[in-house]
Each structure stands twice: as structure tokens, then as C-alpha cells.
Length: 289
Length: 275
Image (cartoon, rainbow over the protein chains, first blue to last red):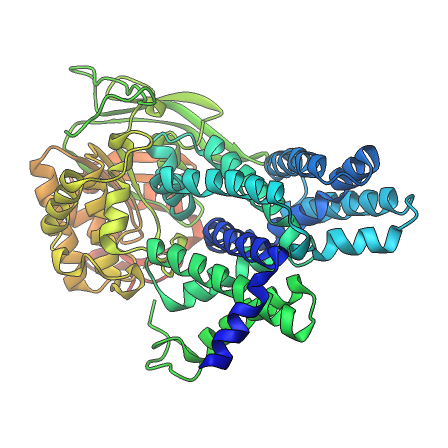
């Protein structure tokens, strides 16, 4: 046992590891909470696109403020919220299908971001940093921002639990109850945007969608109660963050990739062994109707 | 009623004394340039039970959505208890079974509780009184035992009863049910009619879209024959005449002349409830 304890404790002597763990746990919880609605409403592509679409914002912030990291958060936040609301509006008004519109906006924004960053001298390094995250480079200030905005997101989801539930399960009921459906929809898009920005440094743009979708999907396979699904997803997200970071420390794997791989492993286990519903544990055929 | 004073509370339209529960005046709806409803007018009195029949694509769901205030008509006007439907939270729409995600992680009680959301106000979570209310609604439809089941575990009839319970939780005075009887066995249909009888005693007005002309004639106060425009509303004997049916259904309905008169060979669309 001494060996195991040693394995767990050894990395904790480094400040960067402690901060990285704190960030991963918070990001795991926030992403999974919001991700529950992303999964239930079928918005995975929107989440993926939004993560990519904030690159130009980050790039402009980076070019304007030099190497200072602080302002990047705000640039990313502004871009994310604007893009989220923009995509939301396009989806409602446009003559083309929503996923096509998202595809166009997402690729255009991403290309703009790459173009901007390619003007810098350390192009490859900078781009890799934004794409894949750098959880071990999290500062105390970053942590405070993550905690503040992540907390805001989780609180909002909890406070508006019944409203988000109704607009997700039955939009017509929401309309007959005269809930402000559009407002709630845009608010949810904004919450997803904030979540992505908060998680940017931990997992990076390219793997963001996994943090939003995978723990929530795993929880979906394990329970059919929404509050439980949210709690379980948050737990799985946070746990994956911790395990992934240790994996990264000992096996010298990129931290974002390690975290996502752990999430995916949990999902695979759930697919195979979910009680009564797993591939290997299915006790009945598909229920009729 | 458990209403709290909250700055976010929405004001709801009062019910005008003497005004009919539902009045539809010259309503037309167009979808992408195609006419979905054409100049439909009628009125319902409180506590009435009306069947809406017509072929697929006749605009039954569209009519319900206009009445519920979910869809705005291109022309005309809908008045519920004297006011436009958008101000009311007393109109319940029971969706078609295919339009519901039965894998959604909610229980039967959760779905019924959703009906209370309009009465609870923003930022308030459901309390003990809300759950007691939900319990009473579930008792009325005989689903109290299944309150904690995930909704996908229900049978077709139970699913419909759950949505009726949700309408009760909403304290609905006008209920719009979109093909609730399709695909149900006779016993399940009977249990739904039994519940509708209790609703009638509470003066709840019910409109039911159905493909079953037989049942429409036998179990409803009035029937409405719809195919984009209104081909008649009234007692089945007056509305279901061969001429009107032929006009509304066109090729979708076959008539056979027999010695005893004309026999109707059912609505050919979309089966489910047809035998």
C-alpha cells in the first residue's frame, strides 16, 4: 500500500500539479453538468463547433496582449458568447439546415484563427497550445476565473432546473406554459459558451467536445433520472480529470488527451457493462414502443 | 393554488365570464406557401368533448397548435375564454406519442410535475405541496403506483394517462389531445374515456384528434370534419354524411352500397387504431 500512497502523493509536492488537479476537477464538473443538456438535446456538434469558433478571439487576444495570459480569457469569453448567440440566431432564421450553418460558421472562424496565429513566429507551438490545452500551466489567477465562472454556470443550471427540463423535453409544453423559451434557449447556449472558455486551458479546443459529451453520455447509460445523471456525469468528469492527470504525470502523455482517454474508457465500460442495458449485460430485448 | 409572489411572475389572462371557452374565427395558416388551414371558424362550450377527424395532413395538429397559442395564424383570431391564447396557461396540448423522446431520463412524476411549472414561477423548485398536487393528479388517472418509473417503461395507454395527469397538474380547462387513441387496445381506450368522463364533470373542455370515425361518432358530443377547411361540426349524424365525408376525404375513404344503405370502409391512412 505504501507504494500506492507514494504514487498518489509524489506529484502533489508540485504546485503546478495541485493547480492542474484543481482545474481538472472543476472543469470535469462544469462540463458534465452543462453536457447533460448537450447530450439530451443533441447539441454535440454545436459544442464542438463553438469550441473551434473561439480560436480567432483567442488569437486576437494573444496578438494584442503579447504573451500575457490574463486577457485571453476575456477575449475567448466574448468570442464564445457572440458566436453562440450568432449560431443560435442563424439556426432560427436561415434558409439552410442548422447543422450546415454551424459547419460553415465553425470552419470559417477556425480558419480565421489559424490565419491570425500563423502570423506569429512561434506559430506551431502557440497553435498546439490552444488546440490541446496546457493544464499544468494553470496559474492561481486562472483557477480563480475557472471557479468563479464555472460556479456561475452550475448555479444557473441548478436554479433554472425545471425550466431547462421543460424546454428540453417538450418545447410545445414550454410554449403553452408561456415560458420564455427563446430566452432560455439562448441562455443555455451562453452557458455552453462559458463552459467551453472555462475549460479551454485544461483540455484545449480540439478535445473540448469530449468533456461536454462523454461523461454525460456515460451517465445516461447508467441512470434514467436526470438529477442522478447530472451528478454522476459530474463525478465521472472530475474523476477522469484526476486519473488523467496522474496518467499524464507518470506516462508522459499530453494531459488533455489523457483526461479524454480516461473519459472514453469509462464510456466504453458503461457501453459493455451498464446494468441491464450494456452490450454484455442486456437482460431483455428492446422494449416495445 | 400554491402561487408565490415573485418579481418574475407572469401575468395570465383572466377568464371572461360568459365568453365561450374557445372561439375560432376565420383562421388561416400557411406553411411555406402551402395552405394548412383555410378560413376555419367554430366555437366550443365549456365541458364539451369534441372529436376532430380528417385525413392525414388535414391540419389537425396545426389547428391544435394555433388554439394552444404555439403557432400564430396568418389570418383570423383565436379566443380562449375571451382572450388570445398566448395569455393563458390553462390550455394543455397532449402530444402524439411519436413526438416524445421516451428515453429521456425522467420519471412519470417528473413529467406530471412539468405541468406545475407554469404555476410555480421562475427560480422556485418544487416543494412538498407541488408533489402532493402531482400525486393527486396521478391518482385521478390511476398511475400512482408507477410514479417513479422511467417513462419508457409505460405501455401506450399509460403514456396517454400520464399526459392527461400532466394536463390536470397544469389545471387545464381546455385540453387538446393529438391522436391519443391511435394504437391502443380497447381496454386502454376505455380507461381513457373513463378519465375523460371525470374531466367532463370538472367542466374541462376536450378536443381529440382521431382517425376512428366510429369512435368519434359514438363517444363524443360533437364531431368536427376537417381537411384544411371545415366540412362540418355538430352531432355525428349530421356531419358524417356520405357527401361531406367524400368531400373531406376524397380518395382516402371507400363507400360500398349495400341493401341496408351505405357502408363505410374506413379511413385508409396510417392505421394504428384501425382494425
